[in-house]
Structures are given as C-alpha cells and as structure tokens.
Image (cartoon, rainbow over all chains, first blue to last red; front, top):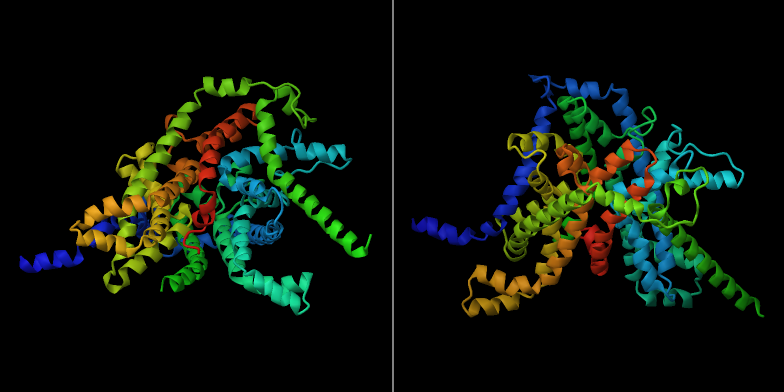
Length: 292
Length: 279
C-alpha cells in the first residue's frame, strides 16, 4: 500500500497526459495496426469476405494500372506544385520584404486563399475552367485564341488541378520564406554592400545561403501536403478524364469506399503511409534537434 | 535626369506593376465568386460572362436560405466547436504535463514526435479502420463521430501549439503559487490557464478553421444529407449541378465569411499556426 502511494505520487503527472494518450492510441495507433493487418487479408465487409491472403494485395497493387497511374500522377502533382509554390513564394516574399506604403493592408489579403475551404475554391475554379461559360475561355476567345479544355483534356487536367493548388497554397510558402527573410539581420547586407556586392550577387551570396533552412522547410511541408492530394481531384475532375488525375489518395478512397475492397485499399494505405513517413522523418529530425 | 535616377524610377514602376499583378491574380477568383453570387443567371451561364454585374440581385442568397442551407451551417458550427472544445480540454493538461515534467525513457519526446508523424500522415490511410470502428460504436452519420475523428487533426496540432505557449509561462510564477500552498491542479487552473489565455484563443481559432474546412472525413463518415457539413454540401452541389453557380457562390461566401473574420484575429500567429513547431 505504501509502495503504491509512493508510486502514485511519483508518477501522478502521467494523469495530465492520460486523456490525450488514450485518444491518440485509440485514433492512431490502433487504426494503423489494423490497417497493416487488413493489408494481408481479403476483406470485403459488404460481401462478408475475410480470409488471409499473404502478400497477394501488395502484389496485385503493383500490377494494377490504376494504382501505378495514381503513383505517377501523385508524384507529378507533388513535385510540380511544390516547386512552383516555393519559387513563387520566394518571389512574393522578396516583394513583400520591401517596405512600401500599404504593405500592412495587402499582407493579409495575399494570405486569403489559404483560409478558404478547398471546396469553395474548387467551386470557383470549376466555374472559371468551364469550357463554354468559363471566364478563362471567354478571355481566350475574345483575344482570338482557341478555347482550352482545362479539365477535359487528359494531358492538361492534372496541371489545371496543380494550378488551383498553387493559387491556394503559395501563401503558405510565402509566409515561411518571409519569416526567413525578416530574420536575416540588416547588418549583413550592409557589410556585403561595403565589400561591393549588389543586386543579384547580394541575393546569391547573402540571402540564399541564409534562407536555406526556410526553403528546405517550405519544400518539405508543401511536398508532404501535396502528396496527399484528394479533395481537389474529387471536386474538379473525379479522377478523370480516364485515369488522367487518378492519385493515390483517390485510389484508396475508391478501392475502400466505392468497391469495398478493403484489403487492397489497406495495402495501398500502408505503402502511402510509409512513403509519407519517410519524408516526414526529415522534418521530424529537425524538430527533434530543436527539442533537444 | 541622370541615368542613375532614371533607373531608380524604372525600378519603382516595375515594383508597383509586379505588386499589382500579384494582387490581381490572388484576388480575382475571390472577386469572381463575389460577383457571380449577385449576378442573374443570364449573366453567368453564357459564353460571354460579364466582368462586372449589370444587375445586382440577392435572389441566390434568398434561395439558399429557403433551401435551408443554414442547417449545414449549423452542423458545421457544431462540429467545428465541438472538436475544438474537446481538443483544448484534452490538449491543455497534456501540454502542461509535457512542458513541466520529465517522463521516464523519453516518453514525452516520443509521444510528441509520434503525434507529429500522425499529423503529417495522409488522413485517408486511417480512414478504413476508423470507418469500421465508428460503425461498431454506432457513430457513423453522427456529428459526434466526426468530432471524435477530427481529434486526429486537432489534437496533435493543439498539443504542439499549447506546448509552446505553456513553455512561455515562467516557472517562477508557479513556484510562487506552490509555496503559497496551491495544489498542482489549482496552479493549473488559476495561474497557468489565465496566462496562456491568448494562446488558447489562437489555438482554438486555428482548430476551428481546420475543422470548418475539413473535407475527406466528413465525406466518408457522413452519408446522410441531414448531417452534412458545408464542404460536403458544396461538393455535392458542384458535382450534381453543372452551372448553377449563383447559389453555389452564395453558399461559398456564406461558408467562408466566418472563417475570414476569425482569421483576422490570428494574423500574427499565422506562421506558428500553419507550420506547427516551427520557430
């Protein structure tokens, strides 16, 4: 009894963490274990099938044209969107690093797009992309160009979705990079100027090296986020035309919740989780260093 | 005029042109939503949509009100506030515990990093087992079920945010309270809580924004129209009616307005808010 009391006093602070711990285990540890388990089963809750399948789900996955296309599209989407967003974000940050009148007023406006619900944004862009009634094609026609099949052309659809992501999330890269620019002490620039550096050289030899960590962080966070792309595909193209905008998240959604092919969906989920975790670990390593 | 000065003026002009271009690209879609919501159908469902509305009408707003879109609004409010309250209630003591105590075997650090990994993980990965779990508890198609599922987003996020705010509270304040004989729990509620108040508010606002806009879990776990949240309602609207843009944009504005107002309060926390644990 006394030992219990002493133990209780020693570890009572665990109680602060306990509710969060229970929720996290229940909502993340258990489902992850379960999804890993299911990926080795043929499991269809509608047809009430559940039997061990070994690696069959994984083998099937990598011979499934839809999954492979999804993998390719996700990769293209993620790289295309991330690189563009960080580059544009850098440009924007340089623009807003200049002190000008009205800066305080315009800054919140630039960040606007990332506040909107993705569905609202998709509604707007879908109406602007519309082949007949959309404003883009109207502008093209009045300038004498051919209208463009933004979401219907299978070579273009993915990039039209990328464009929406760029519009919505460049502000995020911008915020990170602006914070980076503002953390560079002004004396460094003065010192470099005294040494005769100007314009491009100043940027190349002072700004960029000091901004390296922030650029890395922006690339990391945006690539992790874009890799999960689901909602824009759902609302703008539905994965089409054909398989032109099929992505991994969308593939898992369809296998799991349209065909109830839970085993294969779980296998795809495990693959996706491992891929995202590999990149996340880079980020987590940085945080780990910061915590220590 | 010296060439030096001419160059300076040219630079200035270029700067303002660039800035104007940027603002136009950023704001045009929002402007488009605004004017489409007050246009008559003849002005937007046409090959020559107008750049400015000729007749301003609030017909679409009346229409969505009549079609009881406020029910989706109410659902969204309930889910967003429910998840936020639950998260803060659980995350605040957790953040306090993690900030103030050393756990054995680096348990605190492992917990924090695990939570971070979870936040980075694709939501769809957890969706399959969550679906069956919610089903077995009878929580599918229930707002309560969604509130619980949303803890996957809001809890890791709140723990990390609040951890930073709790760490900013000086230890001496608490020690003074302890000397005065206050218990741990009392210190937490009477001393620490008021001091992290502004941090709690900022965290709450971000959590509301996050859950207000969330799409995928709402899509998967709410299949009956009575329980739809706004994003799901909009998604159905987009995919079912090809060019009914007037009411669609009116709903879009109605669902964005509260978030835009809230975001005004957290401008200075934006970076912390969207890129957690970043300093």
